[in-house]
Image (tube, rainbow, N blue to C red; front, side, top):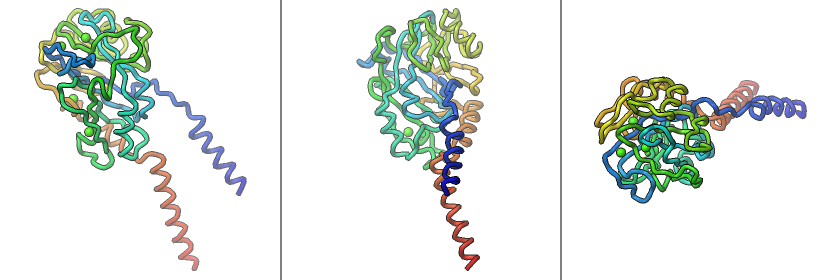
Length: 284
Ligand SMILES: [Ca+2]
Ligand SMILES: [Ca+2]
Ligand SMILES: [Ca+2]
Ligand SMILES: [Ca+2]
């Protein structure tokens, strides 16, 4: 029995403890953003009728999401402008009712100005796998997503006609030209500045739409994580962007709906109990 226990812990150690928790791969991508002609910030450091949309490409816990920063650039795409972070209490309140320990790959998270409706924290991908609402969160600037407490870079998230870069990073940029922690970024500029050029070299030329964009316009990913961007008058806040983008996200979601280890262990324990009972009844 003791030998069995030792073997169990050895296997557990190899599988769980010694497995590096390397999250350097792009685990979340910027999928869409909106430029409006509005100038009101609604007291929340983000234009009230603009939004940013992210897609998780791997499962992510509340702590992993809360450690990230995201924001925009100035209209010359030469310096970082606004820097936000997710609010962990809000994320926890959305995740807890789902019974999951992490947000599933394929989840869409929107951060929107406070004129675009209230927060949508309903989340239940296992309970309702074909529902867009069950797979998405909408966080309002100043509530579920907030201006970062650090003020080294302290502008507003304000998408400009001439150019902008919307980015998400693994930690706080050390200064307003630091792109080294970027996980994903998309933008537009017909005369890219140093931030846009860094995004092109890190994520490919498709990551920057080579034009100005009027307002109101949505700029969105029309493909998969190999970005291809377009701009149109109507966006799709909180839902897949159609075409190849929807095929890509639906593919992530279908593989994402595999039970978590805790659920899988419960299922395994149930199956073993069944086998044990069958064996006993066949012996008797
Ligand atoms: Ca929802
Ligand atoms: Ca704007
Ligand atoms: Ca901007
Ligand atoms: Ca969308």
